[in-house]
Image (cartoon, rainbow, N blue to C red):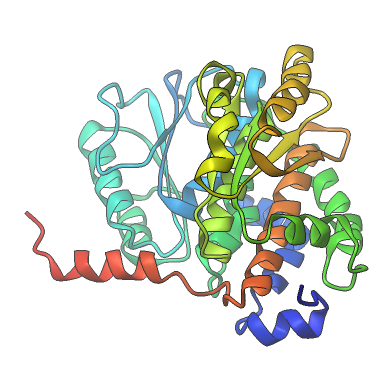
Length: 352
């Protein structure tokens, strides 16, 4: 199987996508400054927070909701469509997140928020979304340009965590974000391109090569599992699927015995040692059942002492594994042909 040295990665990764992954620590700390620079102040929104966003721009909100978990004191809802839920209104903060600022679903949701009289907060690099927010006087978190949206995950995560705090939906976790940034620096040395070929990240990528990955986790690891799935889709141009425990033990677990008859599936169990004890046990038991049809079964333990640290460790590992998976396939991680094709077709279609 191919090498995963820095030189081998550069030969496939034409735009240096791995460099953006390696800068996650900087992105996390810079994002805190950028939230402060927006001038946003706490909102009087007892109805909680609605995050309007798609794809990589919504990923941060999914991760934030997963890591906040039982610390949420008000609802935090992710709206990934053209319209907001029917209960949106003056008592709910709508946080519109679009890296480009031109995502049509998010623009529609922003306009819906205006019509419903909902207070608004925006995170974006520019585009029509920022223009509308500036005209309305809504605070804007200025995200730096030049990334693929999925590579700005540190900014999306921190912005969503801060939006939850500003909405009164969760406590501030700034100290956890700063600790997570420090942890990333050490993990980059352990998992990055200069690490040995048998490092955890490179070994996982090699073991999953040629398989359809199914990534499973509970609580904050469930949010990370969805991130891994999306990164396999976009970075490595592979089908991949994610599931959550304990729900997967009430349906999906039945299918593993027949999986080997249908193709080569792998099972990746993302595990938080601080999860509910029953979910810790479920992770072990479910991996055992999956081994009947999955080849291989890979179990990953989150690192760190705080929830944000543990979540970020799983995100960093998944981002690196999927870049390495792309290199092993000879697929440039910047290419997203399916997304580009759908967007082109939609652009050519009249808006009714």
